[in-house]
Length: 112
Length: 115
Image (cartoon, rainbow over all chains, first blue to last red; front, side, top):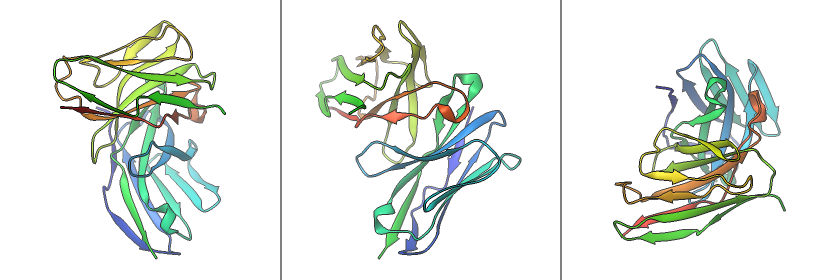
């Protein structure tokens, strides 16, 4: 069973702080890693993806990947109330035709 | 504008009825997917198709059927055999390429409620 694990939260941070969201995965064959943001009642939207060990930055967002530890994280700097949403981690397995396996998501609440 | 259109947005079904959810994309993507989301849970894959006239079962295909007669269209039928169909259904498309190339774009979703 391919699994992606996330802490369900809610994770509460004050406005302007750094929010750190974590995700672990069970299959070492995982190739690509995605972070999606989902507002209540809406569909997921891509924040960023990463497939090489290390950090990848895009604006206020940084994805961190450690394949040896089977761990991927998303950092949100200068958190804003508009960042309040559920963050879904997804993992792609090439041997399964690049299907994405999603975690259950972490609820983030940014308090002003 | 390129995107994915799902319809209807809300659907109510009586027990024993089949219903079909529409999904159309104009992104010229080869791969299309159907996911189901239940409250407090992640997305679970129902069916996917990487090319016209071909599709594969996902993790929870029982009680569902699909067709892929055109590249742009991937309708999902929820049959009476699906015992707990109330959920939020999401259609997505992607390039199907390797590594990070397979970024999925999602439709707005269809919320199905069984009465």
